[in-house]
Amino acid sequence: MSLRTTAFILLAALAATAAAEAPPSGQAERLALATAHAGEPVQRVRFLRPIHRSEVLDESHVLVWESLSKAWLLELRNGKPCPGLDWGFAVTIETQSDSINVDNGYVISKNDVRCRITSLRELDVPAFRAAEAAQASGGT
Image (tube, rainbow, N blue to C red):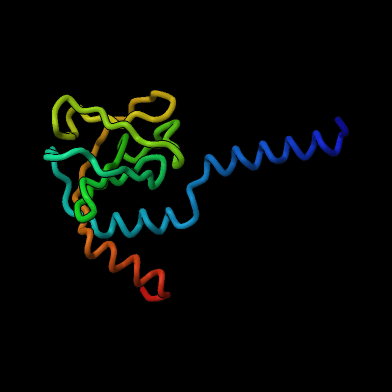
């Protein structure tokens, strides 16, 4: 293998690692919008149906979509990074019942690191979506 090929492979590996560690483009803005449109913290959220999906916004914030029209902003570890929380992987939410709570709720990262949920805030989904649309069209 030539030196040029080795250097290219090394640079590609470093770029892939950096891309895996950095949030996708627009996630910082999405987190800002979610934070701006989240209500007051609550102690517990009871789910009457399975979670629709989850979305990693950064290393300490996850949006949990109960349905297309209901979502919760979870803060982990009081805003400290949760190692292994990756934008490309599903998030496991550990609960002892059909609810998530700040007393004993955890998000489990891809490396099986348990990150304590320290805040649960309901997202005003219509306002969040309207703000996203306004931002996408160049408005504020």
